[in-house]
Image (cartoon, rainbow, N blue to C red; front, side, top):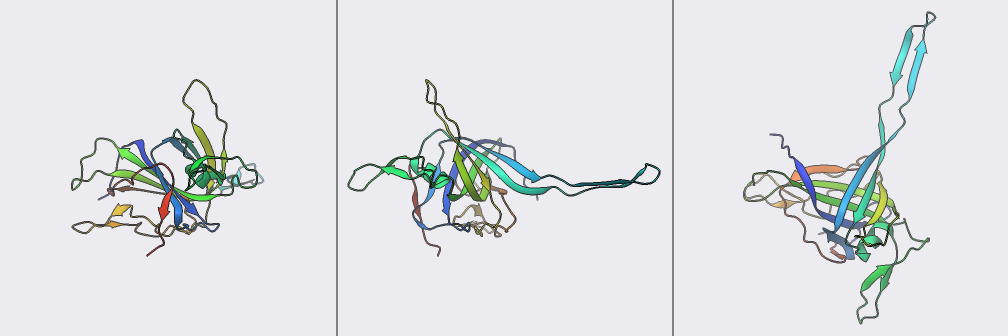
Length: 231
């Protein structure tokens, strides 16, 4: 039976470092989970459709055809209310500023023309479901995946007697090597259910993914954490 849901609120966000080909990069700072975002706005960008028209000798329409819409990418606007230097670094490639502790800690970042906009990352978002009845005692969520995001830029921001949000804009790319992903994001249909990654790999032409899932939300924190090597 098809599952439908009334979605509301953004519950969690996860960023994952990717290499130039769009594959996850295991390492000590490969993943970051945060609930400190205000919104993510996704805007599809399409190639202009081509019209072909031709009238006959009497001036009547002989040919009236239009090409199918072609998706180029999704533009993503990511607004952060909790300024995490590691998150900015993962999204934009902006170099980190560290303190002088024995084990240096990231305390900021820099706008560097040589690196800004060069990072590749994956973005996952979980949204809440309104008025749901729990299935097997587990709440469900809307799960949004953008598996290959590139060319991020930091937008205009204001320091004032008000809350500061840092807005960044990026776009998705085709050719992702996310496959089924490095995380368990769904429960399978067995009893008892087990946590699993995506059921099928992300295809080369696929810019985004959505499904309803009862897998638990990841735990948020400040700063990036390790992304283990695949098993």
